[in-house]
Length: 115
Image (cartoon, rainbow, N blue to C red; front, side, top):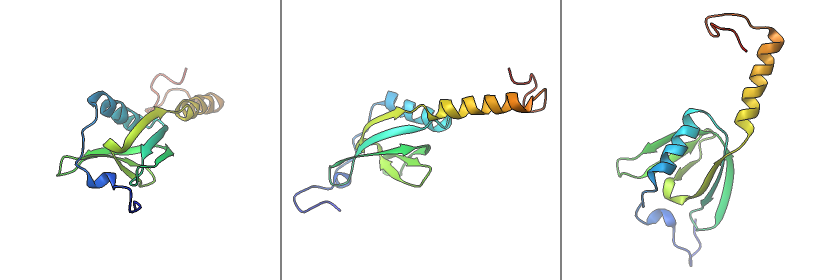
């Protein structure tokens, strides 16, 4: 909870963020790209976290939120910065390496094999 001299930023009216940023966040969510998120906590202090975005949604009150896979939720006007990390690329590359090691040929999942 905010200290007595700090105002709870979630008590303030929601201020919509740039739609291009919302599009980026939705892209990170749908493509399961690991992100680094910098944000303002309820008391206004700067915090950060890393992980996968599970969902971006709008409430009945027209406030937009992102929900992380681990369950943490942030109102989008708390965000300072959302950046992709290289973890998704590393996971994809590991998958390709694994496919090569298993010598995957054609299948219903990989009709043209893995190249």
